[in-house]
Amino acid sequence: TVELGCMSEGEAIELFAAEVDNQELSDLSSSLEAQSIVRRCEYHPLTIRTVARWFGLNQAAAATNVGLIQLDRDLSSCLAKIRQSRNKRVDQRKVLAQVMNIMLRPVSATREAPTTLMNLFLCSLAVVFTKEVPVEAAELLWGQLLQSEPDAVHEIGDNVTPSQIQHHIRQNSASLVSLGLLSAFEIDGVTYIDIHHELQAEYAVRLLRKMQLSAATSTETARRWHGLFVSSYLDRMEGNRKIRVNDPVQSYALNKLIHHMIK
Image (cartoon, rainbow, N blue to C red; front, side, top):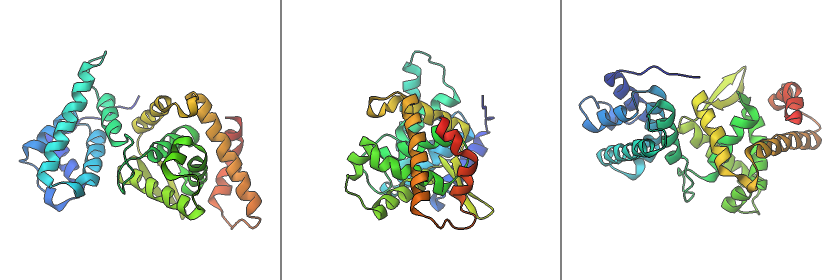
């Protein structure tokens, strides 16, 4: 169980403004909309951070004040859904889940809009790798998902080039980082990625159960994805006889490939 302490209203508004990263929102201390937004987030830093990142990416489409009002309404709708559910108690997990439901609902694929691809990338990271992984290893799996999952093929087409696949990988993984769902960092010159927080990883596992890809259970899907990673790594080794020194994917596979085979 992961519990994050609540912030004061002032701290919460300051965090919201910092995560939005918009000069027009540098001082929200007297904003009634901002006060309402952080209150609806239960003053929890992870929820506030997630909401702020989502709001920041949507700001290009609306004036700041209008955007705050709409965000407050969206959060009000989230809380209403929780209160109408069987267990009406509002808590951090439920608020965060409702916010992420809105963030990641598939819509038409515009530049910053959530897509099915983002859901696939997030879910696969949660069930296949479970902790930090070299970004190149994750990209091996994601490339396979783009070519094998019917929902992904429907979205991007079935005649995509390797460069187009790489474009979709980079675009959607960058959006997940911008939304604060993935963290990217370097260790000894190698870029790693990980789901930012355990609560978001838990959400991704639940999301996979709801997606019901190819009418399979989430366990069957996870097993298939592990197999896709193994096969993509072996194909990579077969096609690249001269692996570069200190190859991060090879180093990862030496430690984890048997684990993926068993899974």
